[in-house]
Amino acid sequence: MSVEVERKFLFSDDTLKTLESIGVCVGEHQFHDQYYDTPESELTLRDMWLRKRNGCWELKCPTSTSSSGREELSGEQSVAAVLCTCYKEINNLPEIYQRVREVLKEAGKDGELEETPSQGDDSWLSRLNLSCFAEYTTTRRSFTLREGGVQIDLDQADFGHHVGELEVLVPEGGDVQSAQEKITETALKLGLTGDKQVEGKMNVFLKRYRPEQYEKLLRAHVL
Image 1 (cartoon, helix red, strand yellow):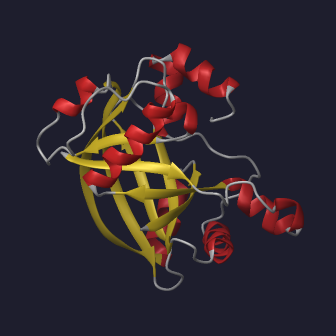
Image 2 (cartoon, rainbow, N blue to C red; image 1 turned 30 degrees about the horizontal axis):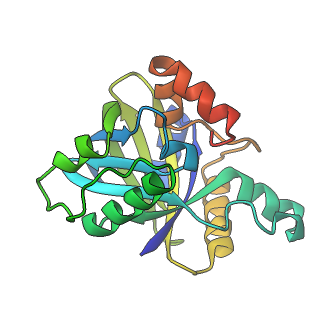
C-alpha cells in the first residue's frame, strides 16, 4: 500500500509555459469519478473518500502523519506539511469493503451483508445505504521533470474548475517529509508561491452543489 503525498496549486498560462520548458508531458487522459457515502456522511466525516473511477473502486484514507509532530518541524518544513495532504490509497475491493464495514459497524449501520462483493457487483452499496453524492469527469494532462520524482497533473473538471497537483507516492511508513521537500522544490521551480492550501475539485464541487454537506465537513474540520 502506498501513501499519496500531494499539494494542489492554481495554474495559469505562465505555469504551463514553464512546465513545457523544464518538464516532459507524459500524456493526457480523461476519467470519470463517482463518490459514495451514507446520508449521514459517516465516511467523509472521517475523511474517508470512497470512489469509483472509470469502473474501479478506490478508497482514500487519512494517515497518522497529517498533523502529528508539526511543532517539532522547522518553519519551512511546517509550511510544506501544511500545504500537502497525505492519504493512503486502497485499490483492493475486499479490503475497501472491510474498511467501510468497520466504519459503518461503529455507527451501528453495517447492515447484514457478510460476503465480500466481487468486482462488478455493486449490490453492497444499497445494502450498506451508500449512494453517490458527487460525480464528475476530469481531463488531466500529466508532466514530469527530468529529475525529482514528482508527478505534475493539470486537471480540468467538467463543472468548470481547474487545479494542478504535485504528487509523490511513498511506501506506507516511508519518508513523507522527504516527499514534501521534493514537492516544495518542484513548486519553486514552477514559480508557485503562497502558504495556504488550494481547494481541490471535491471541495469546490461540494461548495457549489452540496452546500449542507460542505458545511458539515467544515464544522468537523475535514475540509
